[in-house]
Length: 252
Ligand code: HEC
Image (cartoon, rainbow, N blue to C red; front, side, top):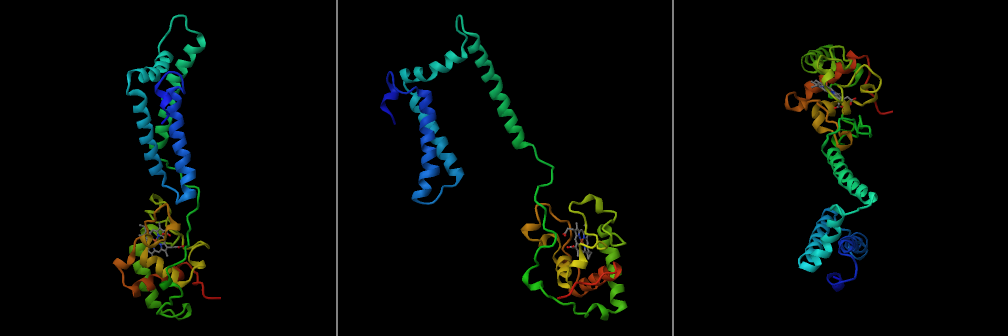
């Protein structure tokens, strides 16, 4: 550190308190990465805090240096005889603006935001590899048996309709409480677009099975594998298609 800062003359101590940490910052942030790897910003922050504290201690530990350090601050804050209006104004500006700005900043940090994030969630992410091209063990759409579809319908009414609606339109009695909303199987942008295996995957693994790109809002779609066998899940997906007059998408 600069020896002169302690004595008369030299750089004003307050300036030193700014300049030394600033030099460290430049060194840690821009020079170090060229020599090795960039440092995490939390580490840089810690170094900076430490360096500022040490500089401050050094500046204030002796009587004469501490007078030079605090002198300008005291004369700025204290009211002198015949003080100019500019100085009084400057003092009040500092005393009012800085606390206000700090308050505004803290408020901004602690207030949770209820606004939807800008990015759109991915509605139909790529399914895990083991579900790609999975085929319904009960055969193609044209071969589905009425009895199986009916079993699926019963289960759908009991377990899915509170959210997805008895008419499969995504308007069940519970639907309004959720974001994202339960899927509307009548519309042209859900199951018609999807292959059998995809729908099976979604019912089996539910919201918890969705990959990260379908966040940040969490889907409440339950993970039905905990309650339903694979066969029953297939039968429910059959009702989703029959009941909405759609056919599963097939490999073109
Ligand atoms: C607690 C409410 C709730 C229940 C009960 C529920 N779901 Fe869902 N479901 C959702 C929500 C919300 C979504 C939309 C978000 C998502 O894709 O996970 C969804 C999405 C889906 C999707 C994906 C549609 C697409 O386009 O990707 C399928 C398929 C589905 N549900 C089927 C079912 C079936 C079958 C049942 C009953 C066994 C069921 N759901 C029960 C809330 C529910």
